Image 1 (tube, rainbow, N blue to C red):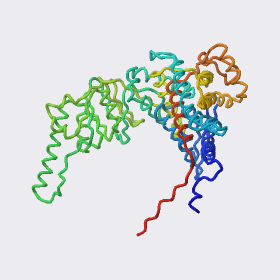
Image 2: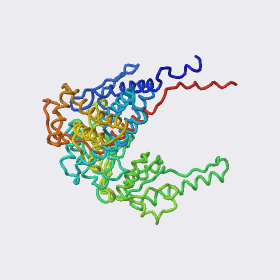
Image 3: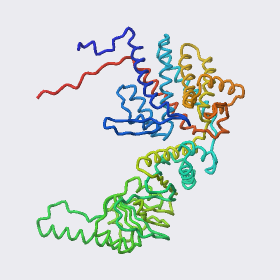
Image 4: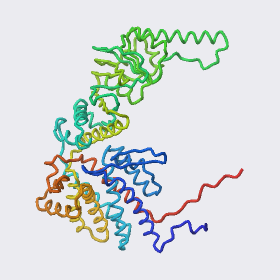
Length: 514
């Protein structure tokens, strides 16, 4: 191929690149658009081995679907970022990004300079985010009925999961849920042989629990080890008698350390690595529960819950016997569950913790149940942090009208970029209405009239009857942070795509000659 053919050949290369990207983005959005709203449908994904996944989760669809176009991959990354940060709103973010790109390309095709369109989109999104913040309803108490409603909507109206999520939120407390470093969704654990319930503490997986762990009630001292609990090894090859004697001394020191731990009256040892079989036997005889190979995140949870300090084996050896007590935590109960293959640690003296155990009848269903439970937990945490706004696309449509008014204050061609934002904000309600089987153009115009007449941001469409109703009164609400983050990330990726001037093929990596 001649070198100049590596460039996109078109009378207007810029428009060609934009239209190519817009088409790819629209194809990605169409894969998830039918899942939006209470009447949204599922999508079936099939691979070359005829393995099937059926889901209505936007990020799952985008992660599993085959995407080759670079712009399409950018949209998939936006959905992943939305899921990682908010745990919900991936479909909305995808639709908004697609709509912004589509409207932006239309403006450029009509002769508006792309840089002016981009500037206008940035201004329009900033204005929309500010207006959305103004419309948020705060949540001050964890027993607020809106939290239950938000969880109910996020988990597809599963009552058991709704009650479990709200109960766990109450146990954790507002301060913990407001902690930016804490993700409520990390408290969800799925198991096919369990009923959906809440454990008011930390559950530690112990897959090789051979015998039933003795239930320990009352004040129990907890030792949390960052690494393994095994005898130290001399790095040298044990060939001489002196070196063999040294290894024996190391074992003796290890056995003495075990005796010191027993004399401290420790009732639970949680280790990040493996535990020596002899140590396990000695501790079992002493009535000490041992959980080994615990993940780092779970070690931190146990330490925070019991107020223990995570200690390494080397520091443990130096601190025994007298200097170890400050490292120990305290809990009120340790119990084993052979069915779940877990050990529960509850009643810690430190920060409150809760584990949401989600159950289902089959392995296939359990994954979907775990996903919606995590969505519900993320939605509840987002609502506590930032409040909520009307759902069903109502608040976006209301803000779209204000963005249109804001457009009149902008001079020059940037106003066309602002118009793109106003048009894109109508997309969520249009899609929800279309998925419910109604004419979106007809319904949207009717809602616009009523919203303007009543100056209400909560009027939307009842997806069962097609009538105009108050979304707040219907209990259809969404966390502000989820909505705002979806719009913000959609704007960022749309602008990044609109900035692409041309599509150029790179040379293949040259084969090195030997």
